[in-house]
Amino acid sequence: MTLNFVRIAYAYDRTRYHPPEVSGKIATAIVAPVEERFSDPVFLELGVGTGRVGVPIVARGYRFVGVDVSPSMLEVMRYKIAGVGRKVKLVEADARELPFERGSFHAVIGVHIWHLFDDWQRALLEAFRVLTPGGFLFEGWDMTAAENEDWRIQEKWREFLGEEGYELKRGRHQQRLAEVRKALEQLGLNPVEEVVAEWVEERTPRQSLEILSERLYSFTWGIPEDIFKSSLEKLWEWARDTYSDLDQAHAIPWRFVLRSTRLPE
Image (cartoon, rainbow, N blue to C red):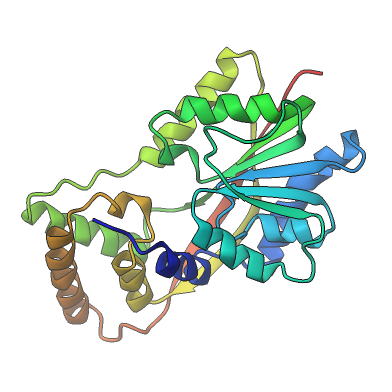
């Protein structure tokens, strides 16, 4: 299965966004503790994507470096920061092999990234390597309650995939976050988690279906194309029979969790 990362980049940016007030709260939660301890800090974001976390930091005038393996994602972000990106550097690179000197950054940010690597330990060690003593590691993720229409649609799709002989495995992201936390604690560090923003998204069944169709979630990437196509056809048919209006929005409550870990001086 070959993914069209140009298409995915623009679709991701269109659908996986934070409202402006939420983006502001997340940026403040990240930059405030760093600014208290360092003068003219430099931020690095791993898997920067299209910049939904990075752009608000850039807009505040901080020095910022973003890395991603997808040139398409970086191109979308580059377009978004045109005119305000004087202190920004975007680099096509793997988080497990960063092209930066030891102690180059005062803060490293990783949002929804650890579950993308089987060997996530390499990325974590690289983050530590490029952090200055006393620097911060910030991990962030979106969370929502399971009881909503979007989740119901995904679970119905899981049933159709099962009928096709494919077992859709979920929960890797949360499992990986727990593994990383354990690793941090074993190193004698003190990761602290905090809900820094809450909001409600209005999403229609059609949008939920389109997000799955675009393969925007990483758990969709490994599904063989024939099974993916046939199961989605069943899902669309089920949705048309289930919802009187595919464009009637439903509410999804979200929270953004930030885990902060400060290295020793």
